[in-house]
Length: 168
Image 1 (cartoon, rainbow, N blue to C red):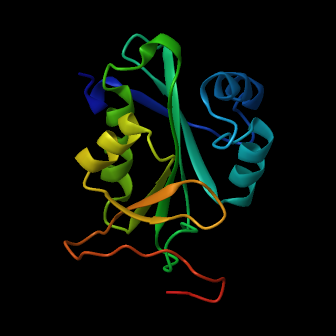
Image 2: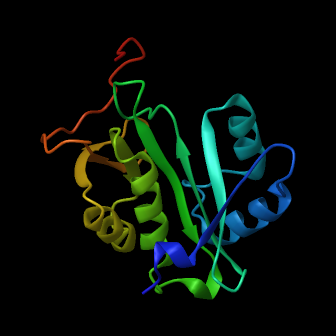
């Protein structure tokens, strides 16, 4: 199992990140329905809507990518955070890296309501989220995903933004 401290998270930026490399790796690993293209990611980072990290192991090998979107479009509060992507590249899967990336983001943002969207049947992602304190909620509007949620307290909440007029 990989420890979070064994991973290095390098934040992607408009000025210094290789979005072409990200795009090639993402297209090899992500389902079309889940794909966030390099162009989309660059735009969202520039707009301040998304923070993303390339993830390296202790030997400096690129092993994955993860990101968050604020606020979550699946929660009614502006302080919420959505775990947007959690990808482990190639033969690095099944080593605990995906779990370590999720743990790291929960440690960074866990004092806020968290959401994540998962394709039904993606058991690996569902296990990771459950182990991080998330619970399955409602189907996401306009997509095939199920929204998982992790409130910052022990309250049993499963909130989905129903219209653009819901705030705080």
